[in-house]
Amino acid sequence: MSEDHHITEVSGSGVPLPGDDIDTDQILPARFMKEVTFDNMADYLFYDARRDDGGEFNDHPLNVYEGANIAVTNKNFGCGSSREHAPQAMMRWGIDGVIGESFAEIFADNCKSLGIPAATTDYGTVSEMQAWIEANPDGDIEIDVEAETVTYGETTVGVDIDDAMQEALVEGIWDTTQLMYSNMSKVEATVADLPYVNSN
Image 1 (tube, rainbow, N blue to C red):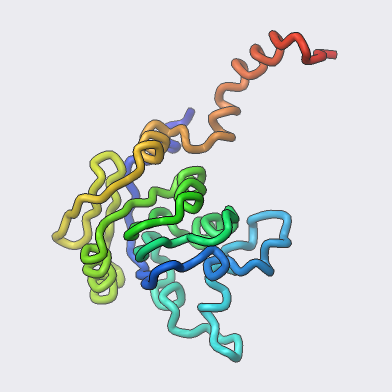
Image 2 (cartoon, rainbow, N blue to C red):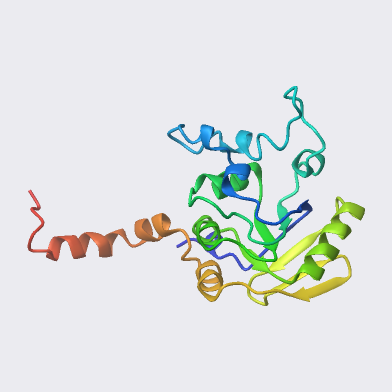
């Protein structure tokens, strides 16, 4: 596998997404799930929340902190349905990492499958980080996946990253499709040895 699949840290500017229980229908409204690919999902990220009644962009954080790639959320982010479209939309918008109080389990697992570290910490730390981003919109935030730390400004704090997520990201085994392709000779050898597979 190529070295770029090993994700040991991500960094960039932040976007605060405050509020508890922000569900996948807010992140990616269900009416956009009829598309057969994820290609346009970035356009639909927080589609309704980002617009006023007239359809114009409002002061939603994603409109204010355009270009940010580290989202800082609160409790139970990504709850609701198990749709992969929500983290797909975030990734395609440019989000490389998320920090929050807690994430819905399926949402976090979908993040892992996309190579997006999801780090958790306490309410006080999240609040301080969100306030820091507001004061330093272009300030750099770094998630160190190996060390389980987040650094912003002069501050470094410990965070939790699920063991399975940490291993998958650091070892570069989060992209299961790429992993399969890189081991195609082993896959083909296994298939050839299966007595119930017709090779003709």
